[in-house]
Length: 483
Ligand code: NAD
Image 1 (tube, rainbow, N blue to C red):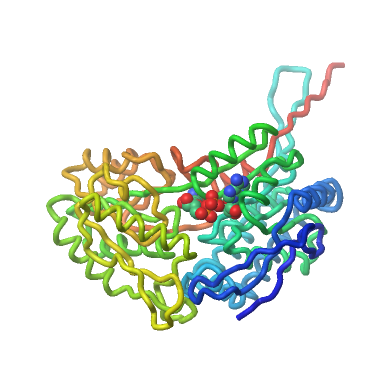
Image 2 (image 1 turned 90 degrees about the vertical axis):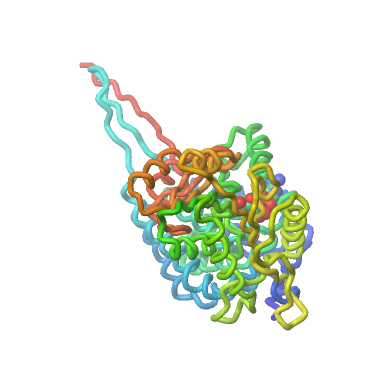
């Protein structure tokens, strides 16, 4: 399937990159080029910033908060009305199973838009009881022009986690999807234009991180960068953004521990351990990629995990029965398989998977879901984010050892605890250095619940009322009342 040539959305108009350059988009399940997408230059970024600024000072800034909220709500409605098409696009460029796109991620994105739409007219300033003779009140104002820079693993959902609160709070947005997965972001821009969002409110700029992304980060007219991606990219963005002192929020990598105690419901924990790592092919920032298992049940538990894993067979992502799709790109597949080799060389025991597979078409970047046992905390696969379907199982002796091993990471995005002991569950939750703790469940999300990192997994929070903080700023107004 060839979707043709895609342009940039700037100031409500579709246009080619200023130098006419494009980049191919590849379907990882077939290796076919499915679209040619414009590669935005610094000049295009500048045009988008000017359009976003004009919309902010003009029609968008003048629109009532309630009206703004209504438009954002309608965008959620439109997304659901086109959920089948959007899910197909998401699966085409990312390789994730269509079931995940259609029944989880597009509905979550629509819900996120509608959740934040509801906040549009409910965030307001306050009067402040200062010492006498003065009236002090605050205004909650938008930060301004917000750039949302997003990765390829949840292309639309992560974009919406930023676009929804940004728009609802009255900011204007420049959205830059990952170069591998730009199609759903462009479609979102198209929907916003059709729904009557004023020109320049949502601009969609496609291109590489090094050219387009960097031009965004360096542009002095952008007030805030909301970034999700690799920790090293995030550090670079933080350094560059310092020059113009932009607001930033960073949602970065993870190496999340999923801790199974001997007193857990082991069948539920087996399901949680496999779903925790293999949902989205393990290309999930919060993936439970370190499975910490209590020594007394280790052998039995890992046998069950390996058995379940071997039943998960990679298949055509467009088939509604497929539960495990294609790795997102050739580069990513090679990277993940390299980690498998490293794990073997460092002495981990391969319990399931580990190989590239052919689903019968001779094409596509498919591999087996993979489990390693006998992993120790100093091994590469226990420390580095693989961002693929590779589970590293590490044993622990007791509660303290579990906590120590769980926290032995530069990351702190998420974590899981499996136990039937309520005291132990909450005690461990209080000790884990992570932005999310799941108890007897894993990988569950809701727009009303905050998500974000501790340590080198970043700062700022997405979703929930906490996200509102990061898309507004407080102005204090003093009025002299002296008679
Ligand atoms: P990446 O950092 O390579 O790219 C992310 C985005 O940044 C892309 O749009 C890319 O084009 C852009 N980019 C790259 N270099 C840039 C630069 N110098 N300036 C500006 N923009 C630049 O990450 P990725 O490989 O697309 O995504 C995988 C990473 O994302 C993983 O580390 C994963 O853990 C992380 N992630 C985190 C979360 C979270 O919420 N914490 C969620 C999903 C993914």
